[in-house]
Image (cartoon, rainbow, N blue to C red; front, side, top):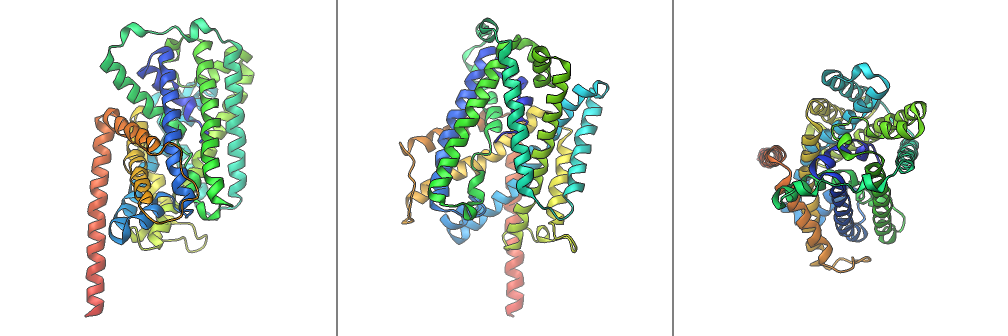
Length: 422
């Protein structure tokens, strides 16, 4: 859950909700995350499988609907993940310009982002070992960075600055739309609490570990993010933060000086690179596994002859991410939000309703059911309605394309089976 996200999205939330009103998006995002997290906790405890929602669809919705939903989930994963990677590459480029100021032009930043993405593909095109070590380095660097930036912000905290808002400028409907945009961004930053359900088969005592992991992770990260955002609001006027490319470095420089800010910036660059490296590594295996099982497009099942990494999957997702680096960050995050919501959030809601109607053992039951999934569903619908035309249209087209590809692949498989029979 912890990465470069909150360090690059602060201006976007402030632009949507001026001043202290931006805290509402972070608080509401935490509330939605915990409500949705309880849904994933119950699903993961009852169905500890590898694949997360992909496996839930197959088990809960039968061979016909389950296969279609599983295919669309993997398809949407392949479409959405490049945007997620691009956001990390863009964040890396933004903070790199703090150390190298002459690279602050748009063209130079696009070039840096794409170069980092290309380097990531090259480094992953080989046998990968010690993934756990990479994860530990990422966790340590990211958490240390957030703590340092938060402490630096609170060193110069002024409550009069923090809570000096622009409340008069908001009518109800603009505020509602702004809250939707802000919520989309904060949910992007909270993403990751459900990752444990993707490796449920490898979790010890999953009926206890998965729910505890999800709830604890959301509580810890929400506390960190709220402390960070409140501290930054009180360290300098929010108007000065709009459009800033390296807020964390600026905050640390004001509190602790330039040399220390440069060290923190290096930590941020390590965090950005490590997170995108780990994400592309894991993401390339998802469509490969589905294709290997005969549930996704066959080319994605190809492995490198010598090093046995999924060539088509790695290159397809990695190259698509390079193209996404040319888009504005707010549009990228909107596409991520809507793309994940449609099959992730809404799909999880449908899965929990289905699970409750089965005879499967349920070792963990969320409190106050059905309130948490209903709150999460309302938030997902709100995000879709306020995300903007580009994100909604892009997601609709990608899902329609996925459905057509599924129908085509099934017809090809049926025709092949028929010819073999005859």
